[in-house]
Length: 307
Image: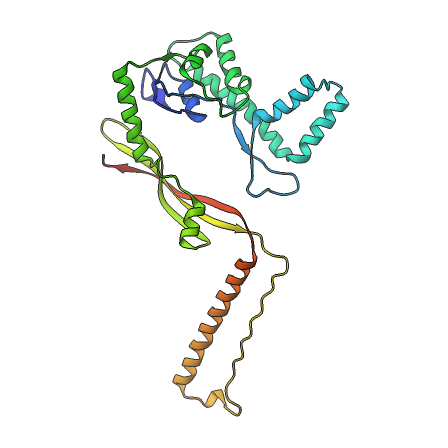
């Protein structure tokens, strides 16, 4: 997409540019990395679907973790017999669903395809062997997704890294601080704190900024809304006792009461019914332990901002 708007692509990295940001950097003709700049491995992560039911909350699993497990069994544990390897794969499948394993294989191939396309989109073409070396290093050879790749290591991998002079470094950091303010990076959202402070089961946070696109003429920020909700484990046999003794005096015929009295009684019964519903709901919540917090986003939209 960037190549549709420019002949030459330069990426400025004042601080961390991990994962997807590293992917974007692979397409750059020049990567200007400040002293604190970092790239990272690009191995994708999947939300794990566990055989027999979902976990709470669903943990994530690195695609490379799956292939590393099999490689460990073959190379370190010296399990090369086909029957034994089949047993290894069977044990893996007992913890992950077949669909997850299929996604692992698909993502494994896809991430390499995308990385290759990005590297070959550069203005200055690089050797095929160097492309493979870069892809292998960023997907397999670095064994932690959180591994920080500084500018020296990035240069050694074969990426077109340049160091900024003092003036440019200062400007890059000032620009980073501006984006830090727009994206509210120093104001992290703590769902537990929000729910506890308001003593609510649900909290809606509106217009959370996620991304910025800026040109000479305009500034747009992508914002979403998010719902945070406590997740509770319903007790198998909740104990709820409500004693409501309502009745008219003996011998009173409701049909012979004045119309306004009947209306008042209907309103009172409605209020009592609502109060009972509230009491039951509160009691069920009280007896249901908290097992996590669910988050759901909605209403994502680009909005133009005034600087």
